[in-house]
Amino acid sequence: MKALILVNSELFSPGVLRRRIRAETFDLVLGADRGACYAKSLNVTLDAVIGDLDSLSDSARQSIGNTEFISYPTGKNETDLELTLLYSKEKGAERIVIIGAMGGRMDMTIGNIMLITNTSFSSCRIEVWHGEQTGWVIKPPGEDISGRPGDTVSLIPLGGNASGITTEGLAYPLKDEELPSGSVRGISNLLEKPSAHVGLSNGLLLVVHTPGRA
Image (cartoon, rainbow, N blue to C red; front, side, top):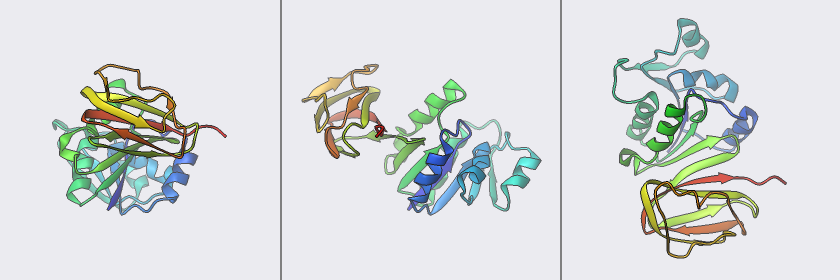
């Protein structure tokens, strides 16, 4: 089951996002609070809007249309995105795509990225779409990365050191190496083939794939 979550940060390259959405089939489309207002721009129909709803005026609710609103207290511990991710998981989502998670408040952007490493969602594949760019987390033992030669691939350690990293099919290879927390060594690598492999023994790697320009 695949879920799409709309978040209230920057809607970067909406035309590209519409094309990417059309190429997929989403079983569940959710708005995290005011992120629901992006549904019209992206040509999607919401199944529910989740959060404390403090950012939604009465007129905004009316413009969203007939959908379910799931409200939480303003003084909650979780962000609206975290609540929406939990709802998606409870509904059986195995793959979750998040749009609108980047830009605006710096703390919220960092928090949105850190959420995809939360062990509560370890059974789900969570992707962050930002225009043509895609971010996700690689866990041990690693996985393949698909694209085109010349695409940019960045590997960023999250939540501590990442070790036992071996890559194949990238221009700047790693061979059983470590990327310590805070390292930027893995940024701006390049795909040499349509598919590369990243092996990982310990830790987590945030992968950001950026298609190259023709």
